[in-house]
Image 1 (cartoon, rainbow, N blue to C red):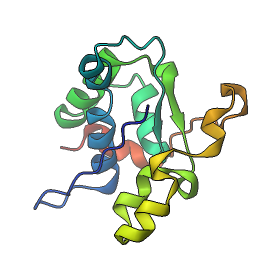
Image 2: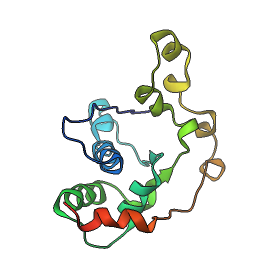
Image 3: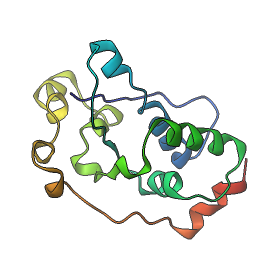
Image 4: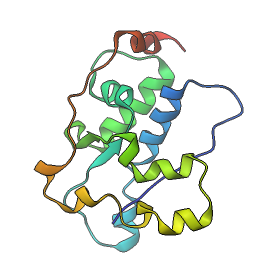
Amino acid sequence: MFRLIARVAPVTRPTIPRLELLGAAIGPASTISEALNFPLKTYFFWTDFMIVLGWITNTEPWNTFMGNRIKGIRELTNVEDWRFVPGDINPADLLSRSCDWSELLRSRWWEGPKWLYKCPEFWPYKEITLPEETMIERLSS
């Protein structure tokens, strides 16, 4: 079962990393298992934005906006369950690109990427790194 989320950016101009963080904060809700009345044993959370993974795993203090979202993510999920997926194989990215209905109907969005059907040791893996320049978001409001 997959849950893909797309949101429209607010009128104010937050940074792309902050928008990606908002997307990550929405995803962990356990609404799928609640709606199905079927407990899921294992969750994995995917993002194609390495900065967000760095923020989630970094234990440094954050400004209020980011700190509240990161705290919420950490309360609802295990940090170890967050993974990186390259943007070119991320089916959720179809919703943020120009894509017509016929393309969406033919896309992998409905089934997810083929590698997801394999054992986790065959899934894409990339070491989580946090570029130094992104730390400016840490204390700025």
